[in-house]
Length: 101
Image 1 (cartoon, helix red, strand yellow):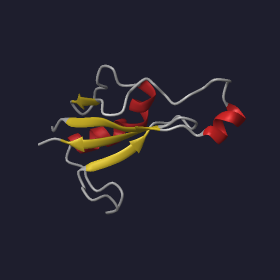
Image 2 (spheres, one colour):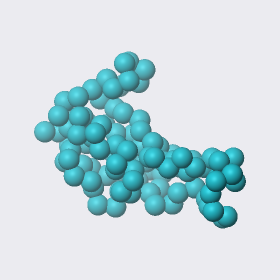
Image 3 (cartoon, rainbow, N blue to C red):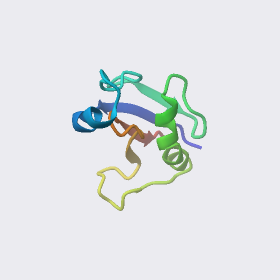
Image 4 (tube, rainbow, N blue to C red):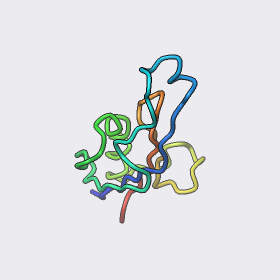
């Protein structure tokens, strides 16, 4: 089984949705920061990674660790990579997930 690297690429904030639905003062997520990376054994959430982010990516991490690839029918340059966002609709965090040799 391959190890999988998870890297925080970007934190975003949807101001329009936040103004309409979120509590006053909500900002972009600060749980994980851009450039931060984690290593997963393929089935276990790495320490320090947001629980909700893990729920959004765990099936891709598991698949990559077991040799899965090309999740998006060729629209990514590297078939051993998945670009995933967490499930927070007003302030999603974007992650790069890649299998390691």
